[in-house]
Image 1: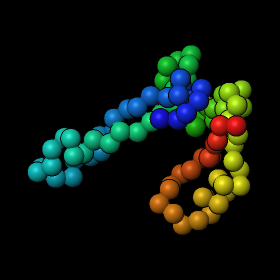
Image 2 (image 1 turned 135 degrees about the vertical axis):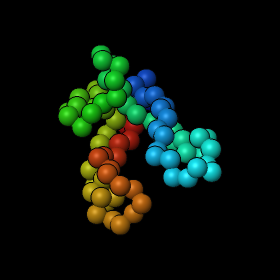
Image 3 (image 1 turned 120 degrees about the vertical axis):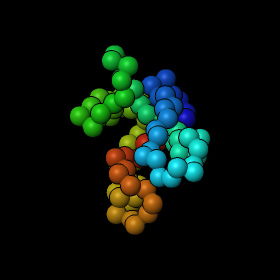
Length: 89
């Protein structure tokens, strides 16, 4: 869970991947992730709402760490699809 004001827009959701094996229980296949919600629609933000996310961050004292984001995207790490790294100022 993020710290600061962004926590008010964040919820934990369960994502169930496709069943790989008949022998695995549901608990073994459930993944919890955090998602940022639109405060008006109460739906998860979509890629089309990135400008809203950046405005939310800026208005609530977060800094978008562009250099770190570029480094993470250019490096062959296990992090995939990093949009941006933010920090609370």
